[in-house]
Each structure stands twice: as structure tokens, then as C-alpha cells.
Amino acid sequence: MGILEKISEIEKEIARTQKNKATEYHLGLLKAKLAKYRAQLLEPSKSPAAKGEGFDVMKSGDARVALIGFPSVGKSTFLSLMTSTASEAASYEFTTLTCIPGVIEYKGANIQLLDLPGIIEGAAQGKGRGRQVIAVARTADVVIMMLDATKGEVQRALLEKELESVGIRLNKSKPNIYFKPKKGGGISFNSTVTLTQCSEKLVQLILHEYKIFNAEVLFREDCSPDEFIDVIVGNRVYMPCLYVYNKIDQISMEEVDRLARRPHSVVISCGMKLNLDYLLEKLWEYLALTCIYTKKRGRKSLASQFKYALVWGTSTKYSPQRVGLTHMMEHEDVIQIVKK
Ligand SMILES: Nc1nc2c(ncn2[C@@H]2O[C@H](COP(=O)(O)OP(=O)(O)OP(=O)(O)O)[C@@H](O)[C@H]2O)c(=O)[nH]1
Ligand SMILES: [K+]
Ligand SMILES: [Mg+2]
Figure 1 (tube, rainbow, N blue to C red):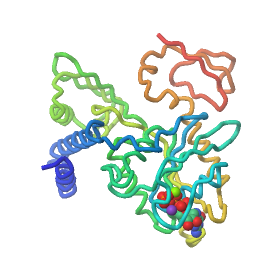
Figure 2: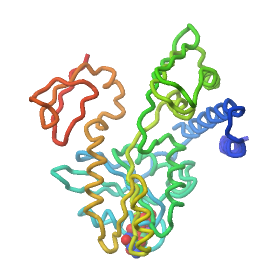
Figure 3: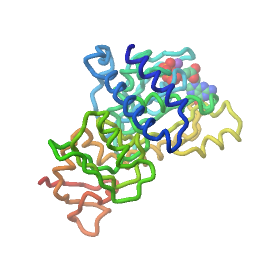
Figure 4: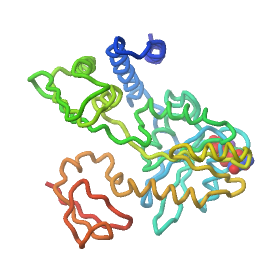
């Protein structure tokens, strides 16, 4: 059986298994297996097509935003409206075939906006140019998931699933679990909070599935088995995402109102230039959450080498002020990190 078939078998089994106390371990194991096969599927050696022509756009500016969405939702129309770059828009699907960068200038910052080909169900497994598109998405500071407002909620769920399956976690923070594989000593398991979703036994089962027999595990949060698996597998990307429903000129006021109230959502019309200013404000908010931190993404060592930082700006009482990792930065603050 190929990996894809194995994955679909496990997915089916998870779907038909009732979730209760008796099936808890079985489900945990299935999920661990699923994550393993997915990781295999994404190993670079097995995906020579991962590097697509026209996709290696240089990072530039202060932050990067990737436009992800089904074909013909209006991604290129949006890029052409917001930046001085023109990206071809048309009524047929897959008009855009490469990655097209533009720049949004806002509050003195240069935000790189990337228009990308549309993606469809199965993108994560390489359908269309799905893998290349997702690879670019991983490098972004914020994802704008552009959705066709006339199609309701279907697109959102499908794309979330695609991104989820390749380890992209949207609007979630990294699970607060300390995990350290060891050379010996078995598995030491502790938690600082009451756990309602995981137990020592389940954690051991999952670790054994990954052939880990010696490790230190400390739950500082009531995490789910999936979150624990994310920690073991590593290589997950935690990313803010704005869901942008475009083409609201085509739907009723009631529907516009309903979509606008969904979490992390903004409704717009590129065609009628509706609500674009508000979208920019929101985007800025989502970027500000991460600008300062995500620039260091990928350099995992920084947090572990962090000793203290000096901050100049409005977030401190005096400038510079010596701060720790939990200090909240404000816009235009300057930071100098002192390593151990
Ligand atoms: N009614 C309406 N049509 C829109 C709106 N925005 C874009 N369109 C139309 O939707 C169609 C697709 O737009 P594109 O910008 O090419 O969509 P895309 O997401 O870049 O498509 P691909 O590159 O094929 O993935 C075009 O005919 C646009 O004119 C809008 O707000 N309202
Ligand atoms: K199109
Ligand atoms: Mg396009």
C-alpha cells in the first residue's frame, strides 16, 4: 500500500471511530501514525517538484503576507488594487501560475504581498501547484486566506485542512509543553495543570509509536493529543491568518453580516472597493503581533540563547529598559537582544 492509501485508510478509521474513553488510546495512536505518514510524504527527497519555477521570490521589506485561496476568488485583483504591481486577473481558473510579489506601503512599513496560484483540495499532496504554493505560505508572517463570499464556508474548511495536513497551524500558539528526548532513564512525565485530554499512559503510547523510550515531558497547559504530537514531530509553523471574504457585492446584507462576525474574518469587495481600508488595519494588527518575533522564525536557537533585551520606545517606562521574554513590544519599538 502506498503512503497516500495508508493515510486515507487511517483517516477513514478515525472518522468511523466514536470518540469516547474506551477509544481514546486507539485514536491517539491513529493520529500519531497519521502524522508520521504525512511527514514521510513531505520529505524533500520524495518531492522533486517542491522547487517550482517562478516561486523563489526574494524576501523584501518588513514583513511578508501570502495570498492563499481557491482559483478565481480575486487574489490577483486584490494585489493589483493594493500595490503598484499588476497581476493578471480573469474569470477563468488558474490565471496565475507563479508567485507575483507586490508591496503595500502602510504606516511607514513595506509589506511584501505575494499573489499565488489558486489551490484546490489535494494541494498538500501536490495537486496543481499546491506544494509550491504551500511552501511559499510557510515563509510568510501572515496568511490571507481569500475566500469567495458567494461560496459560503466550504472553501475555508477545505483549505484549513490542506494547511493543517502540512503542519501549518493557523491562529494557534505553540503548545506549552516541554519535551526533551534523553539517552536513558525512561519517560518522565509531569504536568503543572490538570489534564483533561491527555494522560501519562496516552503520552507513553504516542512516544512509543515514535520509538521514543527516554524523554522528559512536562505539560504546562491542558493540551490535546494532537498538540502533543505536534510538539514531538516539531517543524510546525504557527501563523496568524486573516480570512478575507471577497465579492460581497454578490451576496445579501444578512450573509455579509454573518461572515463578518466569524472569527478572524474580514469581508470585502475588490470589485466595488468595499472595506479595503479596514482590511489593511486588520492586517496591520495581525502583523504587529508577529513582526518583531517572526523575523526570527526558523532561528529557533534565539529564544534558547536569550538572556535579556533592551527596549527603546513606548512600551517601556524608560528607554532603554531591560526586559525579559514576556515583555510586549509596541509599534516602532526598538529592541536589542543580549544572548547568553
Ligand atoms: N463580483 C466580483 N467579482 C470579482 C471581485 N473581485 C474579483 N472579481 C472577479 O473574479 C474573477 C477572478 O479574479 P482573479 O483576481 O483572477 O482571481 P484569482 O484568485 O487571482 O484567480 P487565479 O489566479 O485563477 O487563482 C475576475 O473575473 C474578477 O474580475 C469582486 O469583489 N466582486
Ligand atoms: K482567475
Ligand atoms: Mg490570480
